[in-house]
Length: 206
Image 1 (cartoon, rainbow, N blue to C red):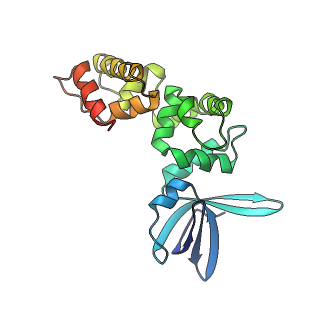
Image 2: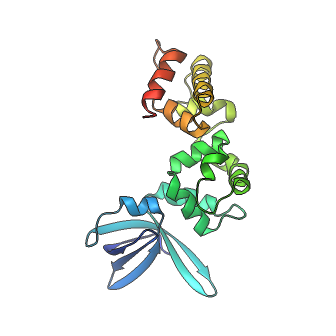
């Protein structure tokens, strides 16, 4: 119904905002992460919206980026994950972190969201893995490291080194999604080794 709302931010709470646009105040449900990123009341804001229409209610869900809205739309297609569950997950992790968790099979990180148990988190991974891979250019599990470095065409040797670094980080106790995200931030050059990737990734952990 609405692609986005742009207007004056009148009220902000942890899970809801009121935006005045055209003389009308719109209640918009948001994630805790979105609430933290919003400016104070009185400022102009633009949120991309998802409209939920039911017999007894019409609800708006707002996101600061199209990317967040897109991942939310995918989340609510999973059995057992309604709009409330989708917001809960996006309240504890960013859209990118969620993608990494899904591709890495990291149900533990997803299950940190309030009301999301381990079985539901595993269902998210099972249902969305192929969709995320198709939408974002993620390959299969063996290609996660290539994506982590921000370059899926770095060659077999580069990918092998990245994968080894990710496995080493996981062995150190980091979650798979944390490891992938850290390796993504490292720069790969002709002089790069597994040790240098690991050292650089560890710096991004702190």
